[in-house]
Length: 139
Image 1 (tube, rainbow, N blue to C red):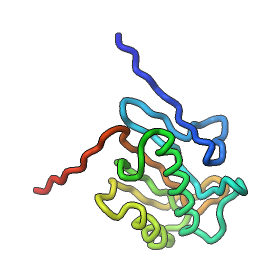
Image 2: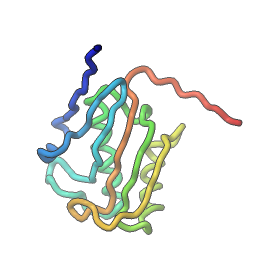
Image 3: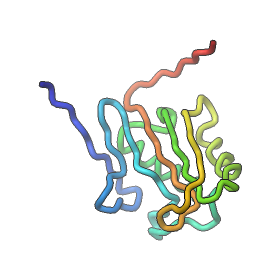
Image 4: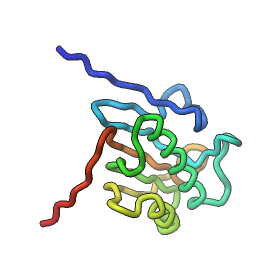
């Protein structure tokens, strides 16, 4: 039976993950990222300014992890956004659109009861690794 490689991805550009999770796992030309918070590597704390600021930092952290896994934002296939308060949906969308404004990935967003570190937003990503070509199918 052929052996398949499961590769743990970690970047020193972000704060280190807790010992019970990986920043990302690469498998079969796919990259599965753990949820990302708006944590600054400089302070090891959430950035100030609320959901929009946290979303910006979270996506910057995601970019670092994608880069470490030989991917990038244009290769993101699916995002899941967890919000502490659904009222932050519009503010987070404004930030999100700055990063995903052309051929955006599939996405789910919803409110949860609580997030780690009492964060306002957490973003989870699935991305492709390799040469990705986007096409459009309309019925």
